[in-house]
Image 1: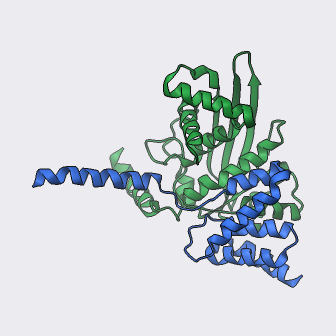
Image 2: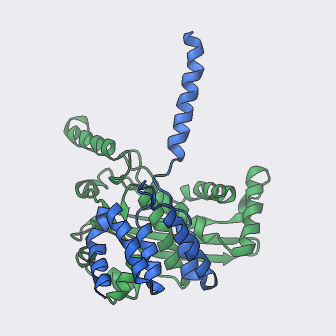
Image 3: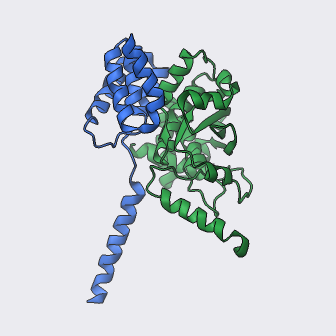
Length: 235
Length: 115
């Protein structure tokens, strides 16, 4: 990752922080903790917007976050290809299929369904506002819901052009945007990072627990066991 | 003597903190960009796939730092080009490295080898 991308990601994560919309739910991860999935099947995201590149862009950016979190993530393009062999050409068909059947086809522990609710660039007079809005749903192989999240983020380059470091970054971003309109991808990754990458725990209402290939896996579940063991007396 | 140790200890702490903070579990290479090109930029597809296959082949050293799924993706890219033997070779690498892939790839390899 080059410096510009990193700076852009940082900048957007600052903006995205303000847009998180979750309520406090201390037991939100109970089903996940019981299931402790090792492998995650990412099916092609369902797209409720008109941009045809949204589905494949969101699909391509998901494996990194799940893999680095410690899960075996099924190869998304191979899965997409095999699903097409099986007759599933449209993401909507895949999303409508029974999760038990899909999980069994690949012997996956869990399936991640992502829905793209927003993926737009609105051209205003002074700036271009890029908005994304994703719904994430992780379902276990038996069809029960393990975790869900919905996050929006938007990016408006000109709002922050106040000189200094941010001004410099914004100038660079705008120059890059003129070349290839890459704003969607960093924004998409920022939302994935918040939804999936955030360390899960009592202080956080976002993120999923680490998977078995993560060095912090044993420690995480030890802590979960301790917290569960002291639930009756501590609170 | 104790006083002199403190800055050293602090520096070590800081250094380890930075190291673990930035460390990735796996090598991903240009995987994501390759998918973008495959899906959206057909004109650059051949070049991107060549680069991707070179990257994955460099990781065929048994050290296991290649990210999950990446051997299998190389197999699928080759399968799409009609190279069944090449595809099976990559699918077998994924199969060996990641037990979770075995039910899916076991059937796939068997079917491809029967062709």
